[in-house]
Amino acid sequence: MHASRSAAAPRDSRAWQTALDRALAAHDSEDAFAHYPHVAFAFPSSSPNPYSREYPLLNYRELKEWATSRGWRVRPAPERAPEGEEYSPPVRFTRLPQRASRDGAGPRYH
Image 1 (cartoon, rainbow, N blue to C red):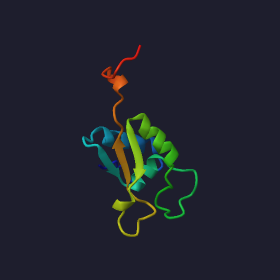
Image 2: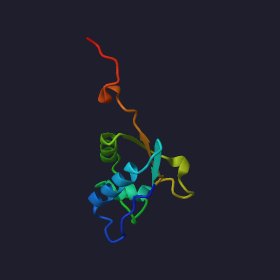
Image 3: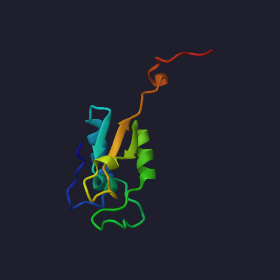
Image 4: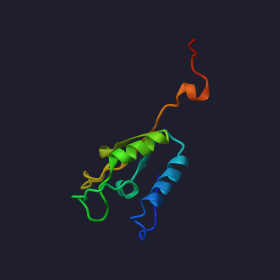
């Protein structure tokens, strides 16, 4: 999955969020992975990134709320990080199970 934006707009977090949202919506499997910098541009922390000046530190709390509201669980995927990038691993998005009550198929209690 690629959520990319032009290099000219790395600070436009809304545009990065829109690109990420579109990439996730187009993804058919249960798991999706995104490059750390792409997600960090979408959800930048107010704290400086001590590991890179090229992209911001990721605000996981904001990302988690956003992802959950769209039906995804989010976690870092350090096992997929290239050598030397252990502080900026890819981000794994896993679809949350659909609630039975949303589609009306669950048991009913009186």
